Length: 327
Image (tube, rainbow, N blue to C red; front, side, top):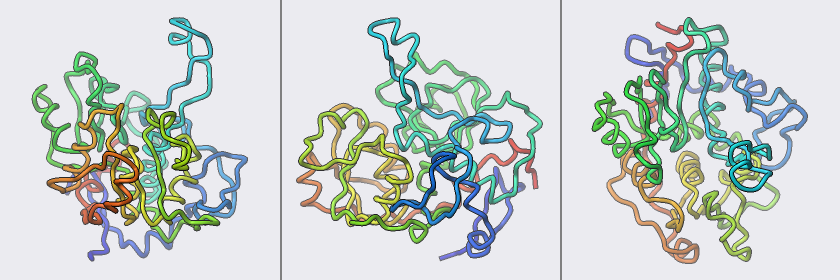
């Protein structure tokens, strides 16, 4: 395997790093942690040894807003509750990944300075959140949500560096938005920038780890012992990293399992459109996949073939230029 990593928005902007030297030199302790008052020493967390500031705030990413989906829940009934949600945030684990991956890539490039664009630039990364895009936004690995009405896509100009898969690309091209054939969910980079060996095993590793989609969790039988997709992000990744098999309707869980080299099988979701799953699988270079109709069938089938995926095109499309990196 080639052990060089190129990161940047084009060949002019690429910088080459040796994986070994990157992982030796980076102080990951200051890059990723769940909260300022939580020590990441519990099972399933990266082997860091001191707390750092929480990274859920926009300001954790210098000068560029990294857009991710994490709305608050309504506390009041009806229209008022929907208009003024004041409850806790959803904290769907995969939707918290985008800002953390961006910050890690900035750390690799020693980028902490301001950008010439100020706070006016927005970057969309992980998730089916293309309908949140605005004119002029930068897109890197984002996908379209097949359940969202096309009329809610209210943009005409985007700076697209990469998208999740070919279905998203086709939809954007039909809108007249130039989109390169650079595919991949940025969640696939987790295993490259936080290797599996980084994650301490839980006390009892899972033989079968069931993770449903956020919208399927409440209907998943408790005897399957499903892991809530609202569990702490570090805990979920740690359990995925050391599971023998990951199954469920959570696309984020499938992506992370693929990234970490863990066998995984998608369970067809009763509430989610197949668009995003197809987009992801095709975008990761697979021409077909076979979702199971139930958890028991997924366990019987076992995982799909382990993913062989070249991370370099997606890494090479990362928009370092937003932070003034042009060489």
